[in-house]
Every structure is written in C-alpha cells, then in structure tokens.
Image (cartoon, rainbow, N blue to C red; front, top):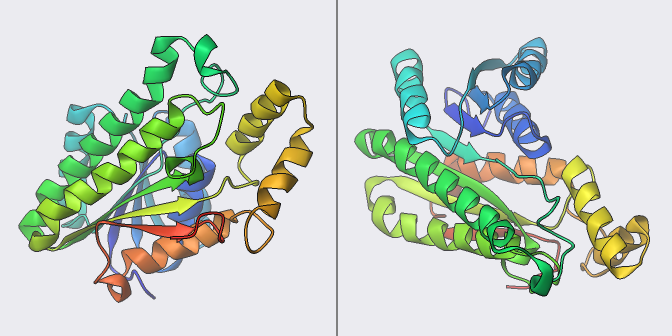
Length: 263
C-alpha cells in the first residue's frame, strides 16, 4: 500500500472532495484524521472508513482558526507520532459569489473567497510544516479548479482566491522543500459528482440563459478527453502524489484538467 503507516490530516473532510480523498488515503493504508466544522458529518465519513477496514478519527476544527488547527495537530502528533500529509479541501458556498457580473458584485463578496481560502491554506500549511520540518518529511496538499489559471467570466473573487492558492503552493516550497517538506496543488476541472459544482453551474447557467446540463456538457467538450475530471481521479492522483513515489515533485501544480488547460 502506497501510504502504509502514514498519518494524514484532512480539512473539510465531510465535503465531496475531502471525503473522497480521505477514503482513498485510508484504502492505501494511511490513518486519517478528519476535520470539519460539523462533527456529525465528519463522523459519518469516519464511520464509513472504519467500516471498510480503514483507520479514521474525527474532530471539529475550523481550518481558518490558527489556535484550533495548532491544538488539533499537537493532539495528532501526541497520539500518532507524526503528521505525514496535510490535505486542505475546504470550500465555501458559491451563492452570492458567482454568477454575478463584476460591476454588480459587492466588494465584500469579491473579497470573501480570497481571504477565506488564503487564510485557511496558510494556517493549515504553516501549522503542519512546523511538525514536518522537525521530522524532515511531509507533504502539504491542496486542490484548485481550472479558473485558477483559465480566465472565466462570472466567477467573481473565486478565481483570484484559487490563483492565490497556487502561488502560495509555490512560495511555501521555496522555504520548506529543503527541509523535506513537499507542497503539491492538484488542479482539476469542475467535478460533476459534487453538489457544489451543480450549484455553481446552475448559477452560471441562469446568468447566461442556458440549461445547466448543457453548460456542463459544453465544458466537458472543451477537454481533450471530452469529459470532466472525475472525483475518483482526483483522489487516486492525490494518493500517488502524497506517496514517496512522487518524492521529486514539489512547488508544482499537478494538471488533472484532461487537456482543458495545456501546460
């Protein structure tokens, strides 16, 4: 198993992305420490993982709260002995943030994803890196969708926040890779299995007067494969990149857009 004996912390673990990644990590032998702001939903994922033979624990943690994050990581290290992977999969509701022209978008709504994403990713990465640098190993991971790189209308401040995450990923690597800590961002298309994407495409479809399913089909057709990234494809790539088989990869974006973006 690729992640046997690894200890992984997942933020936003009750969401579609966080839970899929957590299940894949556990399937490959990792012990997963699941966090989120709602204990019931996080525990549901933990129970599914343990029922399948994996090892999982759950806790309430706000990824943007530095004290909450550092206290939780200290408890993880005291319990498990190390933090080998930190995967931040938090998300925010797109309602009021997307599907609105810039000329009509309130400043606070433009800024919300920029401040929320950059703060939470900086807090979780910084807090995990303190432990990882001491142990001379570890992987910091995050996920962005294609508007982080590809200009798209009606995305508001989301695209700026996601681009900031990719910039942060590169910057962290310049300081931490020399200490054995890798940073990896996985960039995907929108993933049709996730409820958030259906909400997002609904907002965009309404704004431009098109059916949501037609808009989803159009974006899939823009890729080389003629389909959007699947959630399981993201999860399996995350497993590989978190493993020692990807030891030379750091400060980079793994392009999982199926050719929608060509690097």
